[in-house]
Image 1: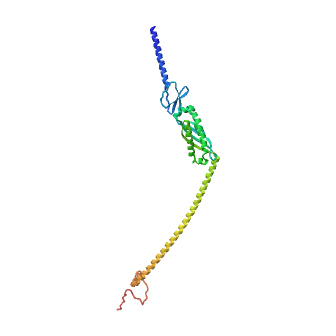
Image 2: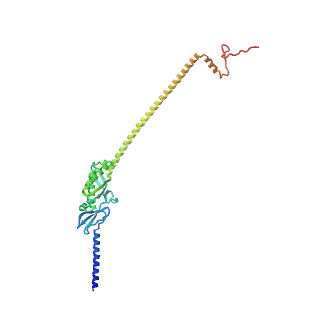
Image 3: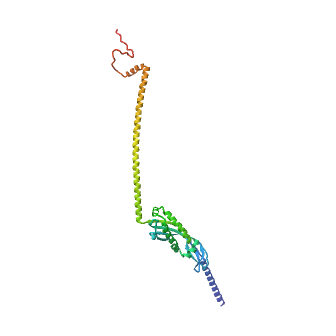
Length: 311
């Protein structure tokens, strides 16, 4: 009988230890609060937020406390004509806006944002989820400011692209301060495309074609003037060349005449100084003469000719 009581007591003890160990394990599991990268966990108790935020990694909490996971990675809100084809986290249709000169435009843009870890408690307390943050902060404010800021720019500046960067910078500056007040961090605001009404595009195209025609005609007129001036220059150069050639030819003839006159003068001086040169030149000219006629009388031979004697 006693043995049975001991065995019964031992069984109860073992069961109790087992239950205690199970309770410890359950409590230990309930105390674990692992946080995945790119998220944080807000600690809750009795349905309310305790104000404590757990960062990524292994954390521990009281077993009776709960947690609420919130994504702090960068999110993308994008507007386009075909939201279904976008890979952004949140998509929407383009906005309609007016420029300062009354032209209707469609603006597609992208907002890259994130929620800072230290503002998660406030975000959860005021909005409850990321979807509510996008709807009430990111979407509402970006669409409103993009419409209002478009009224500060003329359609021509946005169409040519000159004003797009200014427009983009202005909206980003306004959203940065507005989002920060709500606990949302603006990473970047990007204008993707600005579309204009077909009538405006046709008018601008016609204007550009007319301007290009004016430029073409102006270039043609300048080319004609250039060609005219070139022909005049060539004609003047040709005339100048002819004048220079005539002057050179005249100077050549003058120089030849002067040289010939100088040669005759020098020859006369030489003959006057040396009369025998006349006879010498005469003989020189007879060098190649094989026959000729001379008068029978009155001729004085330059070289004495022996007279034949009769025997």
